[in-house]
Structures are given as C-alpha cells and as structure tokens.
Amino acid sequence: MQNEIPVESRKEVMTYLEPFMEGEMATYLRPVEELWQPSDFLPDASKETFFADIKELQQNAKELPYDVLAVLIGDTITEEALPTYESWLMMVDDVSRNEQGGWMKFLRAWTAEENRHGDLLNKYLYLSGRVDMRAMEISTQYLIHDGFDIQTYNDPYRTFVYTSFQELATNVSHRRVAGLAKQAGDKLMAKMCGIIAADEARHAKAYISLIKKAFEVDANQVMLAFEDMMKKKIVMPAHFLREIGLQVGQTFGHFTDAAQRTGVYTATDYVDIMKELLVEWQIESMRDLNEAGEKARDYVMALPDRLMRVAERMKSPGLDYKFSWIHA
Image (cartoon, rainbow, N blue to C red; front, side, top):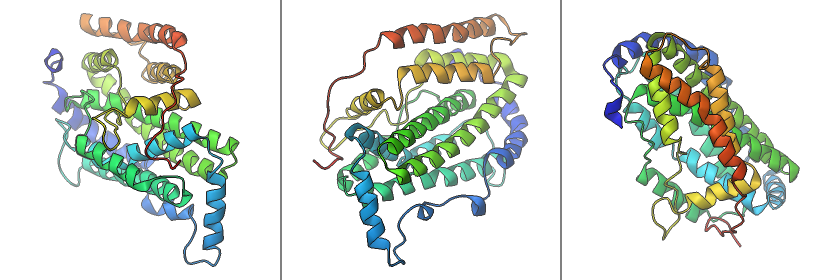
C-alpha cells in the first residue's frame, strides 16, 4: 500500500537528482534537428512515384501474419496514448515544476521523441489498407479516455522503476515485430520498428541511470519501492485496452495472447528484463541497507527464479480472436 513506504526524503533527493537528469539529456536524448521524422520513411506525396510507392507498401503489408499485424496495431494504440503518460509523469510528487528546470525539460524532450512513434506507425497502418482505422481510432480514444492504473501513487521512485522496466519492454516488443516483419518481407516495417526500438533503448538507459543514482543516495527507500512494484507486478500501459462495444480492458488479454503466440513479448521476457535491472542496479552486491531494505533486496533477487518456473509451465495461448481493427 502507498503508506507502507515513508516519503519524507523524496523531495530532497529529487532536487539533488534534477541537475543529474538534465545532464543525462545530452547522453540519452537527441537534439530535434538530429532525429528522424515519420516522413523520412513514408511515401512522399510530392513525388511522381507516390502511388506506386503506396502500392508497394500495401503489397508488402499483405504478407504480415494476422497476429503480427494485431500486435503492431496494439503497439500503435499504446504509443498514441502518449497524453496519458505525459500527464501521469507531470503528476509525480517532489519534482520541480519549473518550466525551465531539469525535470520539465527532460519530460518535454522525452514526450517530443515519443510522439513520433505513434505518428509513424499510424500513417503506415492507414496506408497499408489492411486496417479499419475508425475501429483503431476508437480504441485509441478509449485508451486515452480510460487512463491506466499502474499503482505508482505519484511516487517518483516507483514511477521511475516503472519507466525503467516499461521502456525495456517496449524495446523488446518493437524489436521483435521488426524481426517478424523482415521475415515476412516487409523491409519498411522492419526498419520503422527497428528505429523506434532504438529510441526506446535510449530512453530506458536514461531512467535506469536515474534510479541507479537514486540508489546511491537513498538506497533503502528505493529498494522498498522496487520491491513494491515487483510484488504488484509491472502492468503494461495498455492494460485498459478495449474495442467498441467492450468493457474497459477486455481487449488487452487478446492483445497479450497474440504477443505471446508470436513471441513478440512473453512471460520469459518479463523475467529477463527484471534480471537486467538487477544487474544494472547492482542489487545483489548492495550493502549498508537496514533490515527492511535487506529483506526487500532478498525478495527481488529471488523473484526471477520463481517467475521463470511459472513462465516455463505456461502454455502458448491457442485461442484465435478476430480484432475489429483488421479487415477480413
């Protein structure tokens, strides 16, 4: 529960970390003029080859397997719900609201980079001719409207543990879709998802470095926050995903089933990401913790093996589901 972890020290620590995070922008975020833009990948309407290029795009898109296309659409909807994630990060407690301060600069730069992802994927799906765009747009609007409940309680430690994990998970998903698109012969989609995955990897490194720095100055409280998020399990930001006529979250299970069947994102990936964070944050070797901190450290160190045993017993979902987003 929220009140189990004292938060008295958060503001002092986050104030200390603000210049560090602003410095990380130069390492993990890019100047606007150096970044790719969606139009770099899509047919150019000003060129005589425009219609031929669209025809080629559609021909290649036809080869994408149904489940891969479904996961791609779900990933696109997730990316396009960016207003939810930005507003969530704006509500984090104990960080400066100064518009020219490090936190707000980082948040705006991160949001600006992320905004290109949904923009690019949406335009591709529209041009592909395989997607009922209105049905997809309704799901997107629902997801923004419904928000999400990831139980970080506006706490900065929990929040940035979550973003560290989630950015790594998003990297895995886009990277796997890129590989499957390449296998199906859609080189454009492979390139697009690959470059989006690279963005997510950079963003993950920024959040991971922040938590690593927080461990240096407030190890016990960060450890308790890490333990708390792992006990609750990291839920995906699209866990309220639905289609028209369905209740909140009813489509999410079908989306994750498709991701599991295709190998885009699996229970094993969840465990692997947790192991990566344990190494990045040097959890096993962390000392000078109080009793609660040591107990939390021991819990998170033992968790991957427990989760892997569960993952190994899981069967690949066999239920076929027809998404309203995809033309028959």
